[in-house]
Amino acid sequence: MGLTNPAYVASAKAKLITNLLSDKAHLYTIKVLSHVAANLRGRRTDRVFEEVADLAAARRARLRAKLRVAIALDYSQRTRLTNALTKIYQKPIHLDEVIDSSVIGGIEVRVADDVIDGTIAGRLRQARHQVAG
Image 1: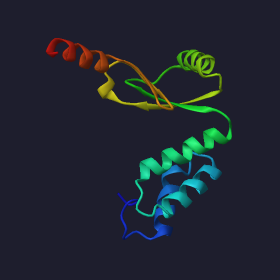
Image 2 (image 1 turned 90 degrees about the vertical axis):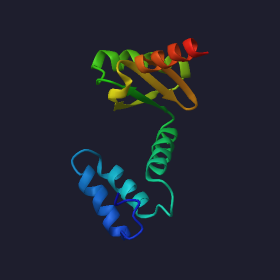
Image 3 (image 1 turned 135 degrees about the vertical axis):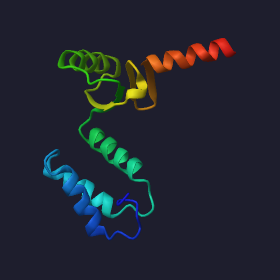
Image 4 (image 1 turned 90 degrees about the horizontal axis):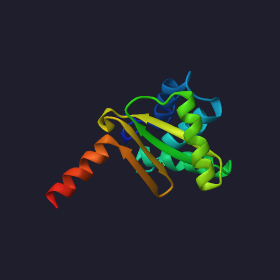
């Protein structure tokens, strides 16, 4: 990948981010991520971007909930989940949704160090473990 290739110069990495996100993200977000991508210093891209997202959420005094779902949640589902998590954590919640077909169905929610695995794949893993154990 271009971002982790040490042969890529910083300006090429920044341009790659700009090209990927130009019509999908706010200009400020693109500038921050371009700067970060150009200055990885051997760190993993995904981890650095996660740290930046967590810092941004902390600065806005809200938490990030990372969701893994088989199909995108609709507006009603997102609203109910946001309200439930806000009530549990007593802070506003921002949902980051990732579509992952390996989930099969259901949802996995990660907030800070908490993981709620309500996926069918997770239930199948748990059933296999109980049968084998």
